[in-house]
Image (cartoon, rainbow, N blue to C red):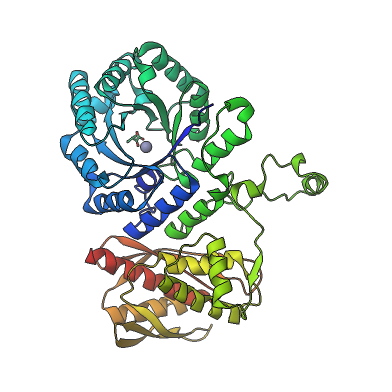
Length: 504
Ligand code: KIV
Ligand code: ZN
């Protein structure tokens, strides 16, 4: 049986949701990992939406080999031309054109009549075909559309040359039984339906995105659009790892496979977390921290006797190994480099040097360095963009009967800039000192700290969201056994990111 096409939209639908925006380097890194995961299609962005999105899609089209690279476009000339240009360097490229077919969207959002929507669809698909033979058509808000009108639009889109037709549950409104019926109706009433692959794209507003996608496969859909960790607009999209592992675990029901290298799933989920600084909840299916943890005595006893008593898939099948102790302070650069490769990090020479220095400092402070510690600390290096400021020195004091104070020295080119400040606590004092050096006031919108491993000498991972001056907010992340140091580095990383974005 042919495989179900896995269309990953982490870098488009996922990236457009609040808190998940990524810069160009981060998107490229994620796209390389999606290729290692072997997704069939990477929706790399929406080129007409901004110069940054255009450049990211273009870069991914140039550099990422393997999957089809796809760009999204509304059914208008400007968008389609932008998508075609951005995708030009890709060996395999797809343009994904969409237009709303529901009465509410056509009347209030598009302000177009149904006849106009049909004409725009025909023209848009034809224009997209001048850039690539691989054109996908989506009827946005399909699950609230009049089915008879949708049959007509789909028939025309396929006649114009679309080879994939997507039926999105844009607002996460449908339920499995109803969605299955909608697909049955399309297969029965669109005369040329066999000339296209039917795709589904489900949002999770009612927590049904994965269930709806799986039901759609049972009703003939052969492409599923999904995202890593289920990120996406509002409540998110169908989670890639849940869809893929359900198909694999219940192949007796689905009778189709996917081309996904499931052993790359965990690494892919972790990379997204490292880049965005947003962790999945512990009870998240497949990739959550508790997904393979057996806590109750009865369950533990069963698993020790035979794993299958309580385990329907193995942690190894998603690439999850025990959090092994890896290296010590005597480990050399070569062993460190090999370990990095094993953990899936592709580091440049400079990144490897910086990561090795951080590892040595960590190994001096911490008795046992675990894989999770390494991932957190090294994750810092790979997610750093251009660094205008580097931390040279910091010192901060606090106490229950003293005013917290801090001194910070930052390197900027060949200069070392120093300032001292006080604050509500040691971290606030450090942040005030940094603001005094840069002359830009940062407003801390969000601050989170998480212990990466157990024990008192655990590595703490800090994520901050900061608005500098009047600009929009940026994210920063860092990890260290010292939470004040991790907080300081996270703030500097946000500052550097803001400066890099302004520079662009
Ligand atoms: O949810 C949606 O309808 C979309 C389309 C652009 C496919 O994201
Ligand atoms: Zn969507």
